[in-house]
Image (cartoon, rainbow, N blue to C red; front, side, top):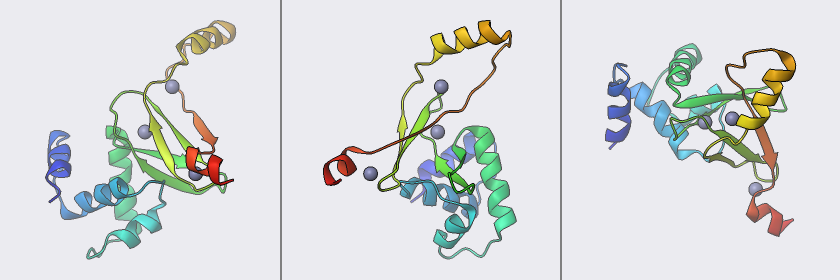
Length: 139
Ligand SMILES: [Zn+2]
Ligand SMILES: [Zn+2]
Ligand SMILES: [Zn+2]
């Protein structure tokens, strides 16, 4: 069990702890972003504190394994990233499910914005919302 996560951790030079594996596992098993309290409550069998879990999540975020997202309720949540390449996520406003999408498609638009503003644009974040196929049918 958890061998895939263990090798991910090792590859990044992070010490493989049961806690780190558990955090990644919780996010792997979730189809929607979770806040720190929710992650902690799903880590069954681990006694840990919110600051420790949060610190681990920040490290994972630096590695590109998770992304932090502030929801419309201003709560910080984390979602698991599967692609190491730049990508975006779209969240269903019906059921809350979040899906990772390959690629970006904004290169041309960003070039135009760079030209307009005179800025050299180094990165961007994009939050997409919509209705998933299931919720479109069920609506
Ligand atoms: Zn992501
Ligand atoms: Zn939905
Ligand atoms: Zn993009």
